[in-house]
Length: 282
Picture 1 (tube, helix red, strand yellow):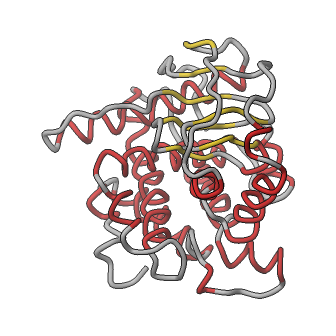
Picture 2 (spheres, rainbow, N blue to C red; picture 1 turned 90 degrees about the horizontal axis):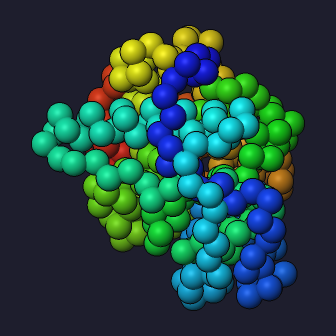
């Protein structure tokens, strides 16, 4: 994946090294529930944390804003900046104005969010309450060792997927999904996640053009992205954790669905092709 010559977005809020804040208010039981929800059922941690804590914000922190100097931080800055640039162009073409996420928060272990206390073990997530993406960079190693999806393109897919959830907040899709239910193979939650996968693919299709070729993914990179999408499918996670597949408990979609919708976005480059809510076949 090409990215080192790309321009960063400067929308990083770096909380690394600040220590864990707000964990005490959540309690061990709440953390365990959120972890089980993520690794067993794939439930968005912000959803679980909101239920456990009555949607009350945890103690907030404010990290350094701007472009990080380390390579891992620069990667997130360049990729997220490029994703935002793609969506700014697509919104402009449709006569709308794109508002980027409030920030991409880099943290370690735990941090306060508008959706409750975020834990590194829950993986990256988007909090609609404060419109921020939360990412502990240790997840990159877990993505490779636990889920078998290594490489920069797989990491970029994760970032683009989470910013895709921000796009859904702007378009109203997030609210629509809540009216359709949080679990089940045809639920609003599954439709929302598959659309975010498709949006990640849309970013892939436009990344090079928007950046003048400084950020670009080739066919091999797309395969790495597909591998990452497959690794976090509900059926794959359920087989690993409980030995059987329970579609009624799906929250993100199967591995096949996640790959198919990501590929659809990458091949068409059209956000309108990502209408999982109107699709007859997920």
